[in-house]
Length: 336
Image: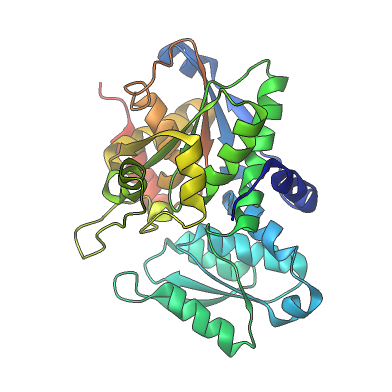
């Protein structure tokens, strides 16, 4: 099981006119400050406020009439929930989303607003996949739309990579590196497949919360390892990056394509949130700001010399509650 460039190109055709072609943004002042060229792929401006719509739409558009009649079920911390709900509405079918009780209010409210039915679970005690599978059975075999570990979902996310290469070329740039937020690895698997096929010299880096360093440890060990989910062992406000283990499909793709995994604590992520707002006028959720944070806080620079280079940060989402965003801006502001 894998994904190739042709799958991603087919996905781009399938979701054309449904997904937004998000901009690739640049700030001369940030470039001047960092001594490199930073391009930000603003997926927070995607339909539903995150990249997740792409993969969900590509998957749902490939369901046959009988499957569509039964509707779809998904499990998510919030962004995939909204992506599936919106894609289901585009397709004219029903959707049930299994979502944690402590998901950000904006994600729960928007998922419901897209027309989906919500089924809540306790993040610390419940098996969300088992709940989703039970609901799918109860609904005569509704299609389950995984958040990252599915070839059609990965291919949909890979359309971002096609856009990055084309948009960078329009700016007269060839990226030297791309930094991508890391949860279950579906976003990286898709983007890295596209950019490596089109420009093999590009280095791909994943950015994940230090408390959820399963991908970093897994790549180092050569096998999938899980996060310790016992209360108090794994905490981060990057709620969209809390998959407990890399996916079965995503892991071998990323093992092949990724140069290194960068781990960041929440305070460092706040610097990305502040920089996105200050230099690009973007509102990013913590998970969406982690790649930019890895660049502005020199986490990437400690692994690879980026002076004079062109680096792309994928801003994966902007669904953040106002209170969290306000506090993150304060924590991430430069010390005077």
